[in-house]
Image (cartoon, rainbow, N blue to C red; front, side, top):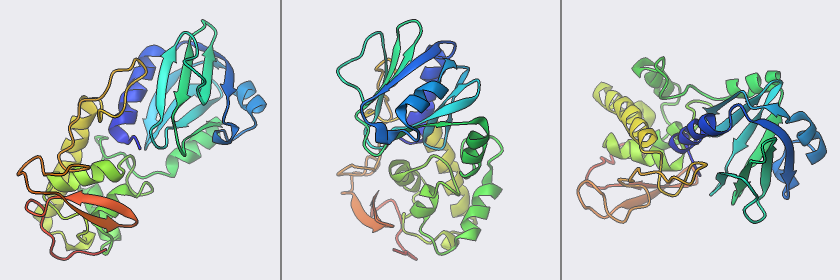
Length: 266
């Protein structure tokens, strides 16, 4: 599932390519991915695209009276084309003939929300970790509120921290040299600072690299971020075989040599 870096890159590519275009129609062969009947969705989702942004793991296309929330689920792709490429799940059709195509998404969705609904939806997520107003005290407050929760699970809790999922929680814990199942309350001051610095540095690097190579922007340009531990057989830092542990129903990858395992919770 694309996370903060991939969706941030997608939002940037949409700002450069579709803002200013006029949306005139919507086609969808998978109506269950919409929050409204297709006819109503198409009626409301019309007019010039006035902005594009990311919130948590969703990409928002802003219209004059609401926004389209795109969540790509597992493996979703967004492409800008002058004609449909095959039979996409969703096509947003612009007045100039270009189309924004959403396809290959499993458990993804496209929701049209009014301005009021958009504001409420945004408030349902935790702070954005790369915003300048999210500092070490903010992360420490999150750790204090859930002292028994595993670090990885806390990082993935969208109501407490927006945008980090299964992939980058592994990368952040690895960079911080912390076992992902460590209890949040077991970290000392130096470890909390290291976790904060790793959260910022890993996500910033991944954003700069356009996210992981499995995902592409609307022009087909793929990300260049190379995973150090998630999905790897060997730790890319020391070469030790990667370990796996289940945390909250998700598989966490870690390096037994780089990441301490004391005071773990599962």
